[in-house]
Image: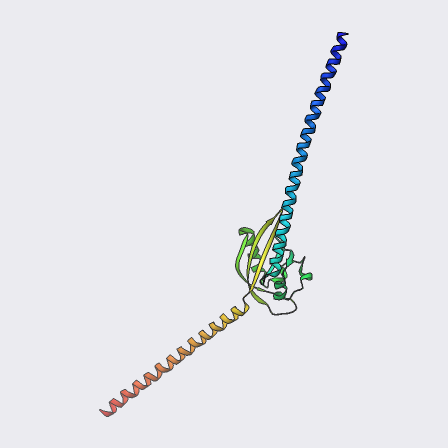
Length: 212
């Protein structure tokens, strides 16, 4: 009988231990569920904030009067997006440009390679002057190119901005040519006056000698 009571007691103790273990397990599971729900809520909040930020960026990007592109920071800088100003400047269709690379935009590939190296080493590009090719057989344009490499999650993105300085370049060339021409004319006129002065001096000397 006592042995039976001991077995029942041990069984009761075992059941109590099981209940305690189960209660602890349920409590731990509830805590983990709460932590998981909080993590999911935080992730949703971040995704919503990121979505709003992307929407704001897209609005600014498309409304910008400066030609801009977004591309992957890979070997060919695969174009992910271009804004309306870029389409107008480069005379290229957006639908046909996306997914392509930027090789066909640079007239001098060595300049492009130098710009890419600067972006890889410094993460940004400033006032890179280069001739760019437009679509549809239009004339090339001279641009100042600005760039920045951004990290978005696990991907590196490249944002480039293009400022058309062709008219400014032509104006400066014309001014330089005018200044050069003016300097040449001044030098020629100076030589002519010097020669005339020498002849006048010689004539005066000759007149003095004849009077004497």
